Image 1 (cartoon, rainbow, N blue to C red):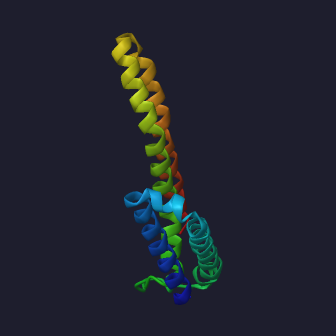
Image 2: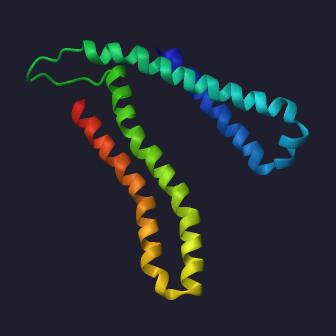
Image 3: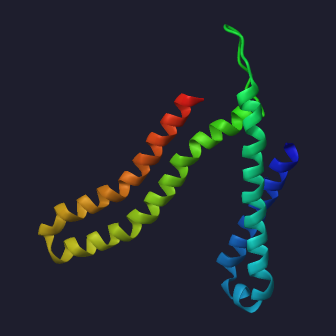
Amino acid sequence: MYWLATLMTFAVIGLITLGFILEFRPRLATTAGAWFKPAMGTQLVLFFGAQVALLILGMGEVLAETVPVGAAQEVSLGMGLAIIGAGLPTGLAAIGAAIAVGPIGAASLAAITEKPENLGRTLIYLGLAEGIAIYGLVISILLINKI
């Protein structure tokens, strides 16, 4: 099980490294594109494959545990994965909301500058985009109650 976590760690480090390469040397991706796209694809496949394997192998540990009443519960690897899985919807929904709010906020500021009476409409659109994060938080709360 630990080798899968190590594989995921190396995949994330590889993705971060490739992201830094793209950020600081964007021409490198176009001139050396023959190695860049396969490397990025390999890192993504490794990461998501290891994540699915961890979830599949970790489910048995979470479901097979029996805890006596009154005993202190030790957090196992499976329980840790379940808690991470319960937190993922909030994180991913927050990222999605941030991606949505950025362009909507910029456009709403431009619209308010031209016509100040459109403030109410633009706030409604921003609220709809922020609702994405609230949905992720609700799902996380529901999942934590199941653990």
